[in-house]
Length: 451
Image (cartoon, rainbow, N blue to C red; front, side):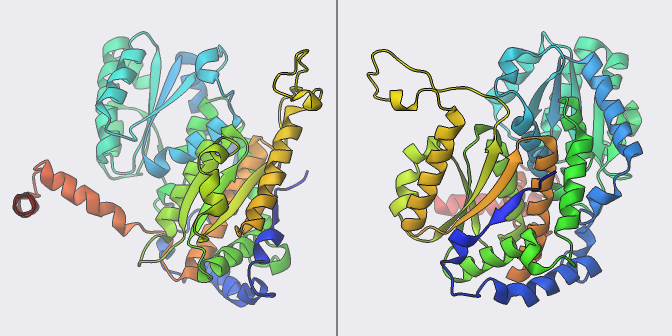
């Protein structure tokens, strides 16, 4: 079976000859630091060999819990924010029927995502939709006190118990949380919910191959064994003993840091498959939260082509030359549809009649790549043989290990997120949360002066 592959030729050419290879000693040191646990954030390296440590028995346990929800529920709501939902959503939307929520597939429950915002309309409309549905909940939170997720779980728990009765609700609420501590753990133990553990040494944005991601993905009806198998293969392919010239992750980390040092401050993730939109969202959190600190870091952005060629295309082609692109290209679509012929040919497109629509898409991809490179945009290409669980698993681990290496090259701790707490402190002070009295007083005085 083929692996995903990396082509850096249209990006490395923007650097001096040999510039990528020159990073080899630094990359080797970064990989050694990850393996030996001597890098910053070394208490969060549980993801590094996670794929190869997952046992068939563990996956069977995940699948068995998922099957209970699949049998009992028309809808499963995944309550989580950031890394507690983006990985699962990325995989589910990449593999699912684009119109699954309209098709109402009788084999698989509809998967909804909540707990990732504080939108009153969103939550109200969701609870209204669920009134006529048999639904279950996967509550994903290490602490159980994250505002967005805790609020959503309160609403869902109350509604589920009201509609199904407390005894039956207990069977369709699953907690994915800390092993011993936190409000979510206390609630799960008290109510008798089935639960799975978020490993202490795996941060949220690296957690898609833990129950955080695996359980929702299994509920949606996708093969988690194939997902993990793909990740295991990429763990081998990107190991520290794999030569630099053959190691995709080493080359990607080296190249993007070389581009950054040469003024390319923004990396744009590009896809030509709408199904990969949320994969880009997961990737943005992975790299943004890992590298954006100490006043350093490449800004991760994303576009969906060809759609965004008609909006962002002008800026990418002719705007400030501080960008580079990483394109995920899917070699073979899962379906086949031919470009139709039309008698009147008013749009002048009969020259495409009989061609596969994917061929047109591929020429748009190639034409765009040529135009952007000519316009001064370095272009990295990651090729997937097809869009399935195995190759998505490969892609996930590739980006995770590349991120760990890249963050070390940048000289930051890739595994913490100190900046995330700043807004929470202000929000709690404004809401007059107990324990924040001094902060409340200070922020009210500040606002009074500003007004």
